[in-house]
Image (cartoon, rainbow, N blue to C red):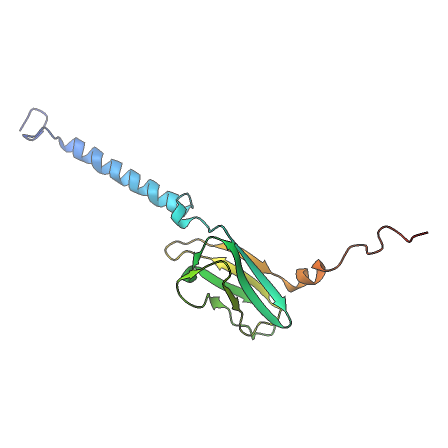
Length: 151
């Protein structure tokens, strides 16, 4: 052994400890970045989803953007009639633009959200929402007589 406790290759116990601390710090930084969405694999998808209630049926359509794994999409809601069935996106694989589902039992009087929640992380983001009270108001103009009568 050398003068400061090094072995015949010149490594000291302090060098091994420093290397171990460096690896741990790097690992913590990567996990932290992943949890807060700084790494692309866990960032929310750039996708446009639409919830449409028409003729007593509610459909959810992926209009465009990133494909999303089906196991990461959830349909959540509140149904005053307690007849709608909410839960995970049906099927396997990727949900791609143009894909659509019908919410079983929903008639349009429910509050509904499409939520992205990655499988391995405690994180979620609402991609689309529908509120029947707000939907009723969308078709109304504030003042239909704005502009007055001709004359």
